[in-house]
Image (cartoon, rainbow, N blue to C red; front, top):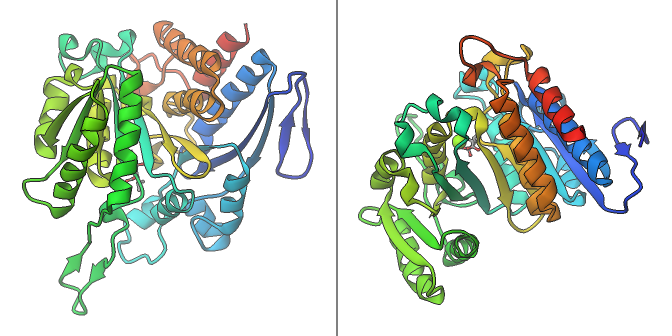
Length: 373
Ligand code: IPM
Ligand code: MG
């Protein structure tokens, strides 16, 4: 196997097997490039091990894209994503925009545009525990040990995309609009039932139907869809109650499905079950190419320090093998390698014990070695 450059950007790993993986790599901002490099190295090692041919090409997104071409999700990046079989994504965001609410063009708009243009209406965030990390959770071990659920967050609707959005002329009133259509709600509910059918056969529909009109439409449609899946239990829960139950009784969930903003908030909360925000991967799926990304942000304070935890991105690569390529053994091997690295104590500072923390590259290299042996 050898690596060559066909042009300045495209790289190809040659292998004898005819399974071809053609991926777009979007490192983004902050720690994005560092963690994606490790996930890409892991992807290469897996392809080498299983004899797949990997082709990959880099694209720009987020603040770095604004800096170089003036927009956060340029057309060239979209075209790259569209022609690829999967997208491996790092993180976006930069303090120079966070601290400037008046900025007209923002890195986050790039992520939102990518999700919309690729039709990625579902963000799948599996929440699981790792035995060697249980003691890191601020929650009691007996509560989190064995927790295993999947959050399905609607990703292209709701308040993130609803219009009008803006300010009154005098600048003293601001408004966002939450909009959902029947079609948007139906398709994500069916997806939730599909996953529940492959898991423990329970769906929790999270809404705020006691207050919001959009939530009442969610609940009405859920009540229509649920009877189509008679072997799956359906539970309805208000979002405030769900926020409490995720912490109090995480093992009671199997598949949780909810709208965009609620899902954003609840999944950050759910990461404390895992032990660190640096551990939660995600898959965004829908109409066009799927995107695999950690749920955490660009962690600007750690940029360039080689200290960020690459495991959420490496675990996102595992989801990529499974969801985009149907390669379950490959995904399982990555997960096994990640668990082994934690058991061996080869971890970054966010989950390190006794002050023994490894570098981002050291964790990535250990995992590559485990996979390659
Ligand atoms: C996430 C992030 C994004 C979101 C931000 C960066 C726009 O928090 O993927 O959860 O809110 O969707
Ligand atoms: Mg978020």
